Figure 1 (cartoon, rainbow over the protein chains, first blue to last red):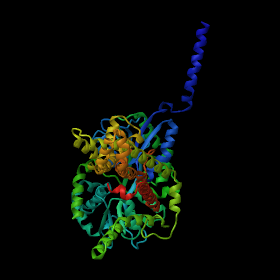
Figure 2 (figure 1 turned 60 degrees about the vertical axis):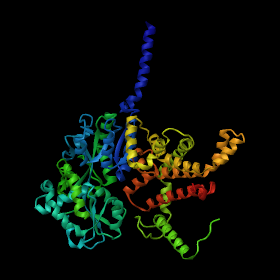
Figure 3 (figure 1 turned 45 degrees about the vertical axis):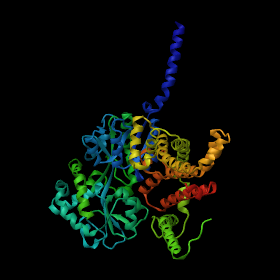
Figure 4 (figure 1 turned 135 degrees about the vertical axis):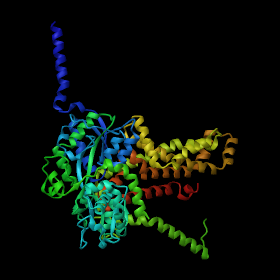
Length: 357
Length: 267
């Protein structure tokens, strides 16, 4: 009997010894697990690679395989791996969420496993919680800051002083649709958020823009050099997250604050349907939405946080559209992509007809 | 010994050759020139002279890691292509295999398919096989695209081998393996060397396939270059590109020293 008791005590001590590290490592459940996360490229991708991912790995003692891509690339990967997904978390612009949802590529974010989801501004929760924003950029025209009379509105892009001096964003990118929404608003006299449902009426106005268009750019990195060198005066519309790193480096470019308002360029996170390690994926999304990570990310990438209660440093606060009341002040529009996406192919064809001929 | 061209025809030929050379080399010269510019953006013409972009790039852990990944990947893809490609080319050339044309077409098919599509197909295959190791995926993918270069050059070399020398060696009692190593191989060495150079360079510069198969830990140089460009387009991008050009130049010079470019390329 004594021996039995002794063995039990030993077992108890052994069990306690094994359990102790799990107690001290707060999130021991994830230890040794791994998952793939598809982020964006650029400054933000680098920040994830060097800061956020290592911190998350340390916190949960897990392994993250990060790849950097763009929205369409990430959706392409999910389509390819639909039956055997490798990725757990995938980043994409707000425009991609309804597409990914309709194609059954992503799943609803579990609110119970992502407590920080409750702090995300309601406007930036997408498609019945299939996507949640984590960074918000401003989309507007940008220009060479040495020109005597910079554009102050979207309407200025049509002004004759920019004849042959405007570099238009490629129709393959979302921002081109936002410009079409402005053209529709100008043509119909309706506010942008109403005019977005009558995009067809914007084409005559887009035809009027043609004499101002010097070229159509695919690659912001080369376009910014051309505008900075004075080969063109104005470009876009484009994301502030693309433009501001150049502004901070002293490049003579600036982003316009159009009188009509700007568009929100929203980066979201989604959970891949049927993904390996869904709990780890949810934990990662929750980590990115935590107040400290949101603050650090916003200050490094100069994009607004998507959650409430973030106390930004003065330099960042002066530039980014944050908090939500400021987003309203800046008239940061979010288009109804669920309605617009089915028209994208036709819009692309029409763009090519108008500007390609 | 090569004769010099003379007269009006010669002048036109030299002029055309010079024009082609300028056309081919001018973009490279622009890149190298921009890499020494003191401007904060990669603008042309360059302003001033500085080596600070190179110092910054060479000191960067990210660059070093990407460079090591690319060189390791290119060397391992070249070795694997050599091991698989030389026997494949020999068998296809010398053995009367049924369906050898079909096998050769299959081996050379990565030449025909867009590599971007090959990469996407491999990504799907890796997911199906539950392969999550990016290094392994990249290795398999790179061997797939480099192998045809080696098969092609070695096949071409084998077609130029003087078969009468092999027959003579066999007649004189040399065993087949000795004929292969002592008579055939010396004649196809330039082709093998050219094939290996192609394999190394194709793998080292490969982008569309690595785009799908790499990750942040295993990132080859072209992907690192592309990611750097999406951050800010400063002369460090030109410095990285110049270092890649330098690597290619070193490989070509190495081939020249090893077997001679003329011999290697006359396959």
